[in-house]
Amino acid sequence: MKDSRILSTFQDLSQGGGTLPLSQMPEIARQREMVFDTCKVGVVMRAVLFVQTVVVVAAMFKAQTWMTLFTEVAVFTSAALPAVLVWLLAACALKRPLSLLPMPAQWTVGVVAGALAGLYGCGQLAWMGLLDHAPWLASAAAGALMASVLVAALVWRAKARAPAGTTAQLAELQARIRPHFLFNTLNSAIALVREEPAKAENLLEDLSELFRHALADTKEAVPLWQELELAEHYLAIEQVRFGDRLKVEWSIDETASKAKLPSLILQPLVENAVKHGVEPSPEGAVVRISTKRRDGVVIIKVTNTVPAGSGKRGHGLALDNVRQRLTLLHDVQGRFQSALVKGVFQVRLEIPV
Image 1 (cartoon, rainbow, N blue to C red):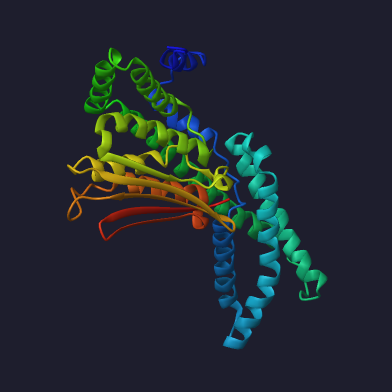
Image 2 (image 1 turned 60 degrees about the vertical axis):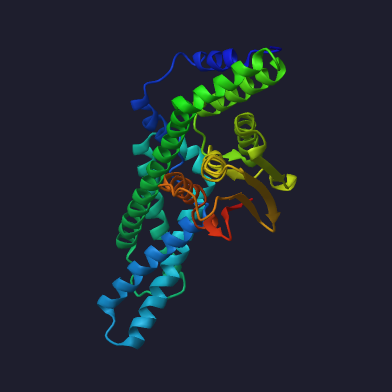
């Protein structure tokens, strides 16, 4: 070979001082997560809705009639809404420096910032002349309490994201070393070594690239072009196995190649297309992968024709994993859809640019 990619893969792994125990991987992934990632639209919406709900409930204790309830809610909202938005904006602007702090320090900063935001809201009401006596201490305590709840929710969200990515990485590694897949790939390479050595070399290089990605550190997000390259390596291997039965069509929009999506999220979709479209059909199937940028959204489609009926129905674990990780990364801005229409199974992803 011109360069030994298989050997270089294991050399890269050993440079970091050895392989870590699998039991430690989720903890390391959690340490790299940004807790105060409040720049997401979904996070902002939920935080504002939570604080507004608390405002309405608090106003109910003081209001005697519907009219006074609306008045109290309006007054409290004029203080609470700017305060929570200031807290969210500050957390968004400082998310990277805060991610370098230990978790207790992040909690402390979040709660103290909440107390300051509460004082800011109280100052707003005092400045507008809506308070006879400004409850500074109570406002600071309320702000700290609301902030502690929001920080707890953000910590839970960060912890939920890290195991999902780690699980996907380990599942991908397990899928790649499945005995039948590995044996089929190696047998194909052996059959090609004497007659078509260049083709055998390309097949082994594609296999090494799959292992390289599966063994690499899980990242929060990777560019779309990297996921497309990984899918291309996988399909090249399966092309040797299925030959003309596997027909691949690409429609790639280069302007969408830098969009961010969870690592190893496209590969399971492509593998599903081959497993449920090509493998059970004597005539084979057509696998189409397309990307398109539309306004501020990138649309990714993976489709495959299926045998008569719907073929062998899977458990849907891969699709559920993709859906959950897409939601964790992009929240309400990311969309996932799958459907079987007229003999074609389609998975559609929408991610923000």
